[in-house]
Image (cartoon, rainbow, N blue to C red):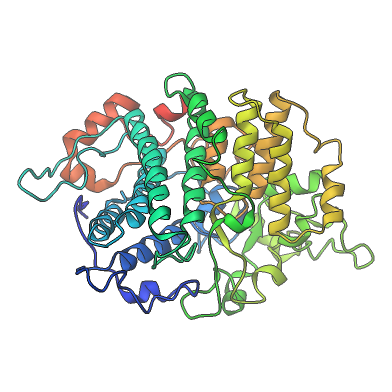
Length: 498
């Protein structure tokens, strides 16, 4: 299929009805300003699609090694990745939203969110592929139309992303002065609260900077990080889980949690807890294990219901046939039946959360970019994750008091602790952030076995869309030559991680 670099999609109201967080009956922000497609309608569709791209219990979460699938009919465990689609249709909707928002009496509110969303989607594409069209993208119409856009270098892409995020923070400050904290409809995450949106923009800014950790000097990462951390009045950040950017599910049709009573019989005995994740919980008697997993039936002892020995994850690299036999024999742990199958509500899906932010700041302090106390932010991240699972304060304090959990300082051991706890907090949230951290740092160790199907390697990237080789061949081949010796190699290392 040809990639459309400029296309405005009029989104159906069905997309808007899937969330109960916001009243979408009144889609017109300003009845005196004519809009062909209300910006709120465009915003709603984009935000819902964001949460469905790589949501809970998705293939992305299998690649993160949070869970495994034992039936080859329904999926596999291999890492022989193919191509992904560009996100220019979404970006066209964002551009349309920004343009329509300019017709309103308050021009900054949708414009600020649009800049954040542009940063989000260009990061989404570039982190998975490398160089991508950016400067000449979305220019297929008009007097000076460009049908075959050139590829921007990944470094230039990230310079633009950082500029957009700075501009978004400035513009949303102006929007808050115009309309206060609210007055943005079509928002299933924050119900139009611009104060929370500003925190999300800056938390995402920190995510971008930490993922540039291999380019501290040439991208001025430390000074950019310091600018945000040292000026909370200008760059407010998340203060608790209440600020999480998340999708909340409910009992409404089309807004069910991924796993629920309706698909229990279909899913239950083929979806198994992944050993990479579960073993990290077991290693430190982590109380979150009792929230997310059930003990393997074969090893469960009613007289000792919390015995960690009964929790058995399956290795991502294991062959599916023996895995299914072990599952049928009750030798492996399934996801918690009460947490994930008792209702249609499930748990919120966090796209960007307070726990992640705190671990990012802890890592920056560990690396010496900022003078803040890494231990404080490390503990904040753990507590935020524990709170998400409603772990009791007593169990939380017991966990934090363990020698293996107490922060070991601004050294490699301390960094490994931060990244390990960040991985645990990411469980079934935040798309492929766990994989990207592994790719960047090697933490935690990912399992590789006979099901890998990629020469015993975890891939470093996805392939470019096949449509590019049909419609933009010269430019995509030039990008491959400059980055990956001319081949669309999933094991090639992009600039970001060199």
